[in-house]
Length: 235
Image (cartoon, rainbow, N blue to C red; front, side):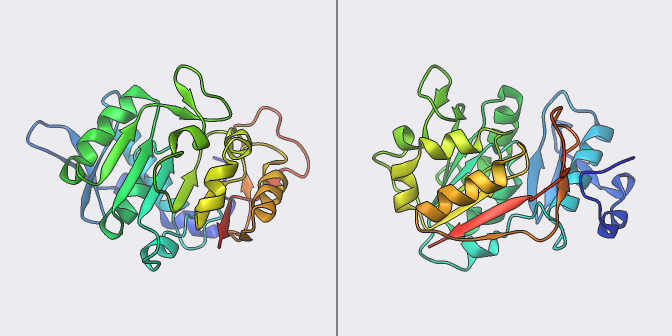
């Protein structure tokens, strides 16, 4: 089966070996770095195992999709983080012990419910916002600048299915005050170039994760086929 990650390291991960546990309510969870990670109620155990295996592949040191959370953990100036497009929330779990607050954006109701269970030990440090961060303020949508106009923020991570560019275009004031941006660049053909240009214009020093992603889920996928995975901007 073709994978978005065309590298030998993926052979080190077998979804059948993923250990899923159950809480007192028989709700399945995965113990991610000694923290319980919950999933959508509609997901069966086999689906959860495959999903977790995908996360572990994604976060392998050789992965083109890896978020380098050490940049947050090792930087004491980063205390307010936005996890935009959180899904199961593993990124927020990685950094929650090292920061003052994480704003978790997830508009999928099932994921939001799972996130509430996952982060129940950290209620004083997290806020779950059931809105889609993009380029407009309307109904369930919100812009970066609108939400963070009067709130502290040091870092954003964004994986929002191709809305990253429109989010950044309506987040100019937010980009001016943050120290770190970690943005997915593989959803659309020109995302890597467009996001690079935006971050450079705002004074960030940028770098891409090594390697490339074959994003099979884009119906408009075309040459040169392979795309950069994640860009990091630092000040």
